[in-house]
Length: 390
Image (cartoon, rainbow, N blue to C red; front, side):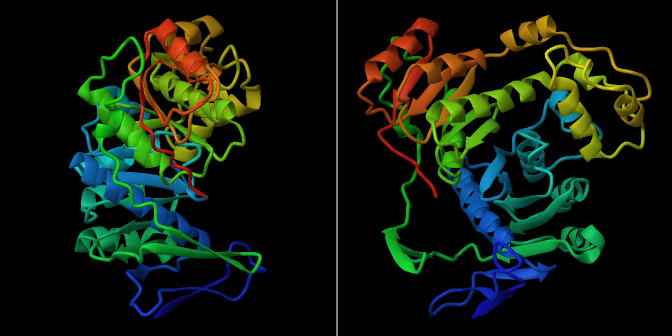
């Protein structure tokens, strides 16, 4: 069985299709038409949320863009502040819906036009959360009837809805072609568990259960993130994912900057921005990003921009206010898909509230990295497990 695609990665790449050798395709497109990139995002994302559900016992969701997760989360209840920063203040959220709202909330700017992956049967609460966002499609094991009917109306009826067979198990050998040359390898089917955090190598050996849970979420996320990659996590969700960078420190900076923006979105001045009532969510996200992009936040908003977004010009968030606010956040967990070659990664992570680190270890400079952790009271575990993904 095969599924014909409109085209491949780009419109000039034709013909395009997906197939499974000697088997039925494990997916059914219930609505819309899935594209090449949609399916890459869907299948990577579904593996991620399936593993999160197995590891934590809670429903999980991921928001994917261009074959890397913008965010991933499990279905913990949202605080009042989280509800406000995720534009979900008045929503009734099932655990699965909470997981998606959290996953989308990691990096709402990057999640614009995402492909959603759900670990569980999609209920109406989750469909309503999806309905409110700009998204390309969703994959889940199944859908309640009312949820499916709602999703079918999205994007004027063109929204892509995919059902995947939970019982499907892929072949143990993966095959791909590059420039006409065939590559084969065993699937990366390692099961990630909290046992990976047993080898704590720092003076601070205290790793609470919540920190281990968050590091596990970060590691499972990295397993399906284009390498090099680093992930920050807190309160059952990713808060910054740095993907596809050529150097480790650039991953750590990129993910750390995203984590900082996640923290800053909780500042009272941001939560109380005087948006125009009818301003769409994507425009609110863009306005927040612009508001936070300057050292003295708000000064960058020119007269025309703020008038298009706000009822009154917002009060700036000063550089000192930003520093003070960010200094109040801690207990962040971080995972890296390969070893830290230098202590500069630890120094950058510490600036974003990181207190717990999981990384493979094995660098010739491990002692320097451990010393950097000890200087800041960070607990670090060597997992011995690299998680490259391409």
